[in-house]
Amino acid sequence: MEAGSSTKKIRVVVAKPGLDGHDRGAKVIARALRDAGMEVIYTGLHQTPEQIAETVLQEDADAVGLSILSGAHMTLVPRVVNLLREQGAEDVVVTVGGTIPAETVRRLACDAAITRITGIGELEHEITRSSRTVPPSTRRALVARDGHCVFPGCDRPAPWCDGHHLKFWADDGPTKLENLGLVCGEHHRKVHEEGWTLERKDGRWVAKPPPLKIAPHARSA
Image (cartoon, rainbow, N blue to C red; front, side, top):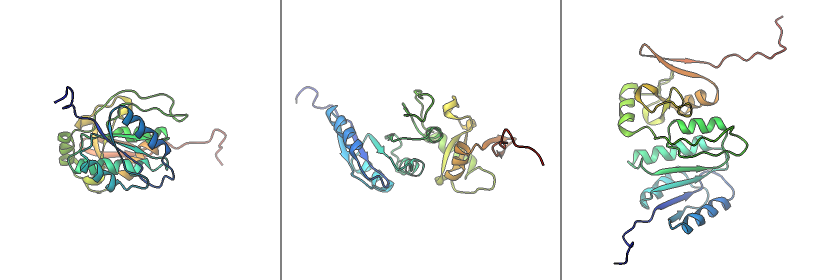
């Protein structure tokens, strides 16, 4: 056996979910990863989250890179992550590429492991702090405690929900049970992108709408 022949190469799936019309960037990344000595499986255009997750599992991949230019990050990325989680593949590293608004980045960061985010013209600064996703044991405790989406009036079941950081992960919020709540996709968007706040008081969940904005020159009648 030759020296180093037992070393396992990193296997990466590069995928284009959604309706993107071209894949030049994804192919550039795939070539660069191959040149770096990794095994790359490229899925091609117009893949569904289900197809991507199945490819990751079949190929026993260590990582998956999602290239998205359509703006559908908050629909596609959580679906891929949840499908992998359901199959016990939560250790697969998920990397996302594309131009992503800052508030969408914060929401993605809330329930995902992020090593580095760089924005072009849309982020005021880079987030370079590593973090972990909600560990399986913590998520089980979260599901046992909350049962469903905790946003008042919502009863969407746990499989439809993310582990939301009450103090945002991007603001140094810890990934601990006391700082988490199960929130469905619709209400996760409200919190991160519409300015709602969610907190737990005396065992009850309270949601507060964003403060009313009054135009500087507005006058009462």
